[in-house]
Length: 165
Image (cartoon, rainbow, N blue to C red):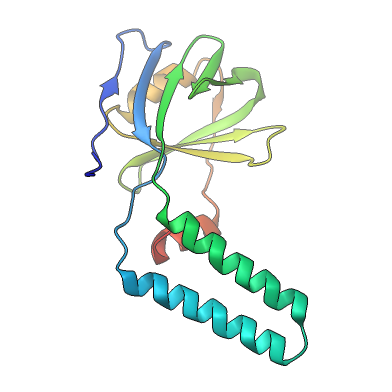
C-alpha cells in the first residue's frame, strides 16, 4: 500500500477560515536490519542489566525496546487542521485561541512548521507541518488572535528526527 506524501490542501479564500490536511509525520522506510539492530541493542542492554542484578531496569529496557519497534512501524495519521475565528481545530479537537500563548512559523526546514505554545497542555509546544499552504496565509489567520514570538522545537525532537524517528 503506497502512501501519498502530498496531501491535498483544502484552503478557502477567507484568511480567518482555512483548513488543510497533512500527515502527522513523514513515514520513513526502514530496512529490516534497523529493527534487528534496535532489538539486539535493547536485548544486550537488558541482559547486562540482569547480569548486574538490576531486574527492574532490565524489564524496563525490554519494554522500551518493544515500544520503540512498534512505534517505528506504525503508519502516520492524516491530520485535518482548520482555523476559525474562535479556535484552531485538529481532527475535531478544539484549541481555543485564548489558550494559545504564542505561535511561530519555523521556515528553516522543509516542510515549514507552525509551532504553537499552549497553556494547560501535557505537550506545551505543538508542531504542525505546513504542506499545501503558505506560511504567510497562516500568519495572517493567526496574527489577529495570538502574538507571534520566537519558539524553538525541543532539541530531543530534532535529535529523534535526525536518527530516523
